[in-house]
Length: 217
Ligand code: ADP
Ligand code: NI
Image (cartoon, rainbow, N blue to C red):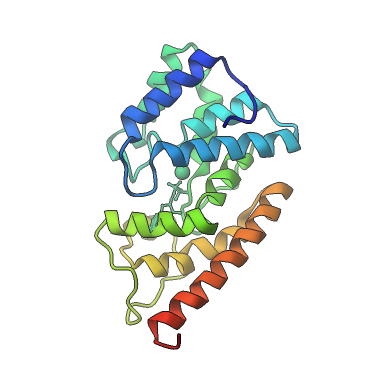
């Protein structure tokens, strides 16, 4: 399942156990499987881009442990990530720096200033689009009590970070508010190529969804 061994087996296993403890059972698209896919994709891109594989993989594995949607009380201080890195004697700052720049914040989203950060951001965003991205959007919506679609609620395009953080919308609107924008936000060539395929798949899906919704099919 793992593409490259960038860290000792024991450290990898400890990390997976930590993810299981913090994110295990999340039904909103942020379960450990999301994180492991992001880490695998990030390593795959890092190999193409000749980036630091360990820094890339470790940052990817910890990118959601203090996410403000999942763990608002530790988000500002990155407590979960810091505690884990300290316990394993790993230099915290380069990894925290990457994690801080990864997340989608609408028009306030950062373009990471390190190659490894760019790669982790691409990998995280690739997991938000395509077949799995579609499933995650509806899973997130369901877990947060949102309706799938309401033609009377228009999408809110070009939100800033604060607006995005508090905006409650339908799952279908999330495609127009975020997911369809991700293709043009890719930092790496590999990211752009994979995003283009997944984007096309998502557009076809949305056409079919709306046709069935309207009774045109
Ligand atoms: P980020 O922190 O960059 O937003 P995450 O890895 O935390 O990235 O994943 C965010 C994913 O969660 C979205 O791509 C989507 O699948 C789901 N999600 C977030 N907000 C919504 C929403 N309002 N409606 C549906 N899905 C959402
Ligand atoms: Ni994520």
